[in-house]
Image 1 (cartoon, one colour):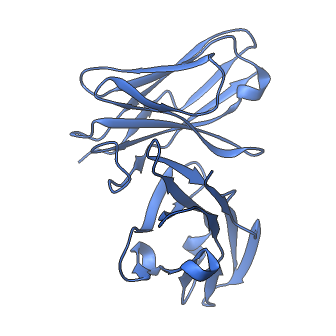
Image 2 (image 1 turned 90 degrees about the vertical axis):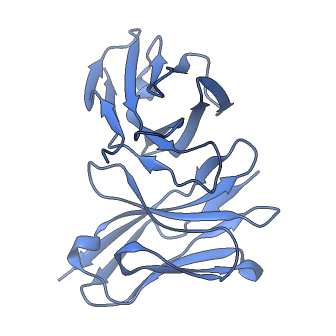
Length: 113
Length: 114
């Protein structure tokens, strides 16, 4: 069965510093991979997705993610963090059977000024 | 285009009661999925409906049920509520029931069971 691991429950980054959020997945075939962000009291917003092709994917809000098959990873990066980026970030893999999303536990990002 | 709307946003119930949550998808979207979000279990898939048919169901007891209407609006029902059902229930819509279609999430309904 598909699974997603986000090793970091909390991350604190200074404003203006770079960010990398880790995501490892378990899936037999080429996965469909997603990153979502959830601000307090809000639903999830899609940041980017990967299905195939170029392994470096650009998303909204200035983020990018790199699919590395050899490491079963799909890490999210942002070169410079703003205070408004503080939120919870979820990595997800698409399960082909049933077309559902399997989410990681999430990483809470705190931004300090 | 209006986003996914969920009503009510907040709900307080007592154990043993039942509850119905509503979701209106983005216009033109025919697939609606429901997820439960709790601090302990995270985000878990409940079920998905497409063209009024349940396409897939997660690992939840039969107390959790849903349906979809001809206008794609969806409802989910939880009967005989338990304390552990307290959660944020998220609805998501997409054009069709395929992974290539982006799922758009609503703000959720916060259910508290006392």
